[in-house]
Length: 106
Image (cartoon, rainbow, N blue to C red; front, top):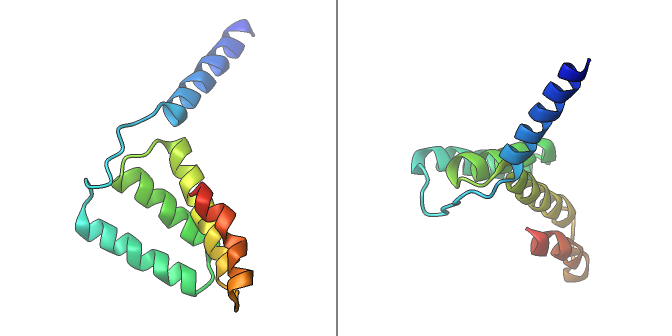
């Protein structure tokens, strides 16, 4: 039983380290064709109000194209998708300002 607990603890520590260890993200190093595909998908998700798909594509772009860590990619994708969801139905500047906290976190 101790070996199982130790194995699970080690696996959890490795996953946590993988997800949180900072990477050398480079916003200039990306595949332009793949980024164009992702960008198109993100705009389609935004206008179709598919925020879960938008979150996924944002996560994918920050992970695969820009090299962010999994944890940082989750944070960026969540904040950007939340800002989009909050901003999209607005009809005034006052309403749109509600998206600012998520944008600032992004």
